[in-house]
Length: 221
Image 1 (cartoon, rainbow, N blue to C red):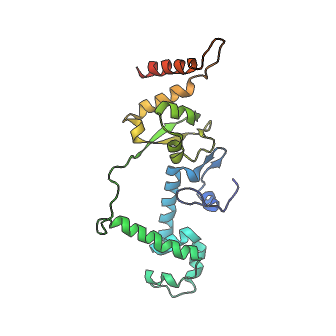
Image 2 (cartoon, one colour):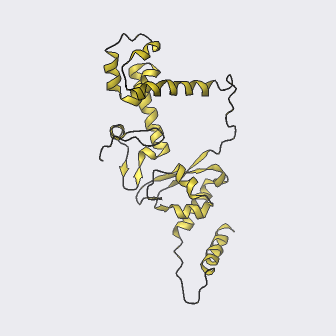
Image 3 (cartoon, rainbow, N blue to C red):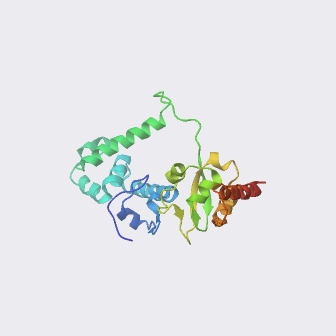
């Protein structure tokens, strides 16, 4: 796929890194915006960088600016410990990024010491496998989930649907699943297969809605 410099997604992965890790970028699907795929890639990349640099400040600097640039900067200073990181000649964005990410990791790890409240109840995400074309409109109807919530966790599907021949996963907040992922899949399939209502002579505006509700009650009963 064409290489782009722009970074995308939760892990801000650029096109060059995506190409190196063979992340998919095809019509209506961008792997860098896939929460699961991009996180797996980012963790793999961070581990590789740590195997190379043995130092977390250098790892994050390499993640942000590229390992080649960090290696070149190391050649120009006497780097003995993490305290020497400030001596490196790297882009100002990287020099700002590294202490921020290190500080965030420290705060999250020792949040109790700093008396910082963290959320105790999290509406965790459930993986719902969908191995056939699924339109987001059917998911919204089946689960009574908002378009904003659905797209927030599934932005990798640019056409608001899982493309044909793509074995995709939808991430759905647990509160919409009600503890039964299998039933959730069946509900989505039901709405996905239900044909669009054909307007007939003599119909009123409420009839299509009544027809849909009858079908839903039949499925849920």
